[in-house]
Length: 209
Image (cartoon, rainbow, N blue to C red; front, side):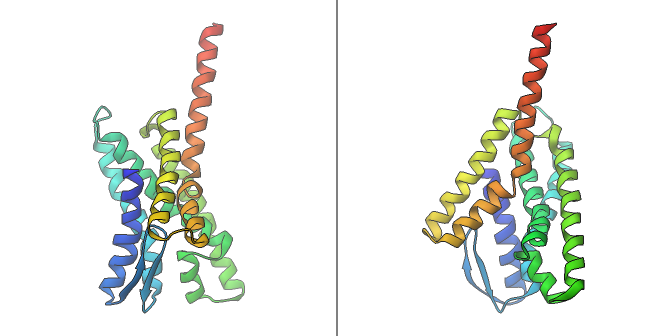
């Protein structure tokens, strides 16, 4: 929950809200799943996922230098992984759905036609490559399988609670909460399940031997 909240603050707070204020805009609405700035700006849109990418890059340096036995290692690793999934996953999400932060930017640069389609393709492929590469690097630095699965489930629950407390039962924010947690963090859930399966297979192999 703490790692997800920190990643959420990076996206909505430092990214969207920080850029909105830097551009002397006015924050009309801000929660864990909703942000509105007046006047709107492409820079405000892309600042959210870019803040996640920056948090991943900076956090990775600290993860690499943190002792594996340090009590803060798991928290820091989850924070870095959540930011990677959110930042790079948004590239894939915008490319496929044609909506979201990166899609708004693409519409501003190339509203329609083949240029928009080509940019969406580049956006999607880049997202896949960065998402997979980041999780491969983080794989051995994340908590064990059961703890990782608990973190994945807990992040989604935390996201839903935040939305229900701030936005009520509105459908759109709830969907966004699911997308930014369980949806964006799917790779972490896969790593947790694969790690558990691999561990069980190794144990069965030892018993058979």
